[in-house]
Image 1 (cartoon, one colour):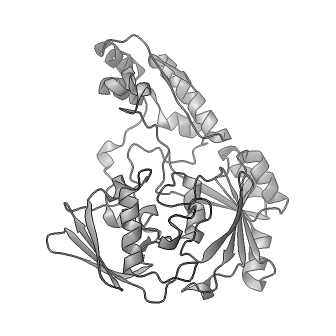
Image 2 (cartoon, rainbow, N blue to C red; image 1 turned 90 degrees about the vertical axis):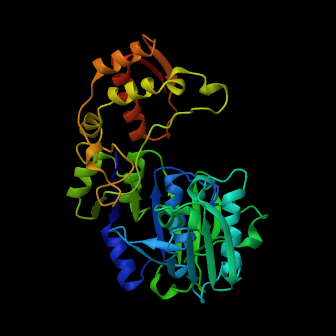
Image 3 (cartoon, one colour; image 1 turned 120 degrees about the horizontal axis):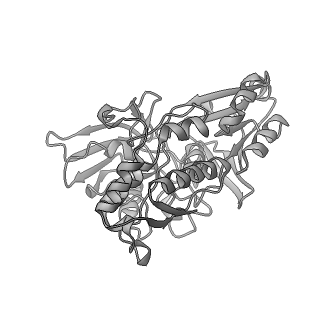
Length: 376
């Protein structure tokens, strides 16, 4: 399922945007981000914080076009195995050091080699990185990779100061975006302050951005209504009508690149020793047991787009042939029997918020009809 619903308090936003009556933008998040190191980070809400904190080599527009950010331009060799970036000359990290080719190379090499990096697979085709001069970065690829620019428009392309690599970058990041890290209180707030030396600082009008994690949908919305927040992300579908009917609020639904998925441990430790990991027919049966349209109607109240692939319709990689509807529990049961099982037990771990709890309770019930005993 994919859609991000934002709600914002119109009076406060208009006042701050037009008259600067409010110098702080207060954002309510559904979850608390994990580490604020783009190389090691995993969470969706972390991306929301990174958008203000860390610039990337390239950015994307709402219609998925690549545009410059830290890189002013780029070119690809005729064999598609060399990607060359020309960097901005006016960008600095939050510690004042320049964002030059050596710093970009250091970041990419760290993302490729750090033992606990979550960017390794995203940069797997990068065989080596060169910095022939201060303004040029050259990526040598092991094979052509159509996805690489996309990866570099996300956390794989975010830059932090190399001087901070050994100074707790996940806890006190020294990044490169329009806002710099001020403080973090776990499960309470993340505070960013405007970076006056940012290359595009004139187009950022808040002095401070405060992110507040509030997992409970109702509490998050009530904080918005009370004026304690200016924007909240992921409005509960059951609250969407009330937000639309409130003249003081605005609902902004956006079909995004993100999606919710079930990831299966195929080979990591003893927990991978189970039928779901060992036999693809069991995984296919689970897929057949789940009706995404029912999830959308019952929990999403029809507001979400069922996702059968990682790519949204706006993407060049979207393949309509993967789309389908409904579920087939009988065929799922037949696949389980073909694999040698009457019933299969496994455990699902999910994010601690109201909507995801509802989703996976319904997945649990659907799975039970098809032969799965799922523990949440």
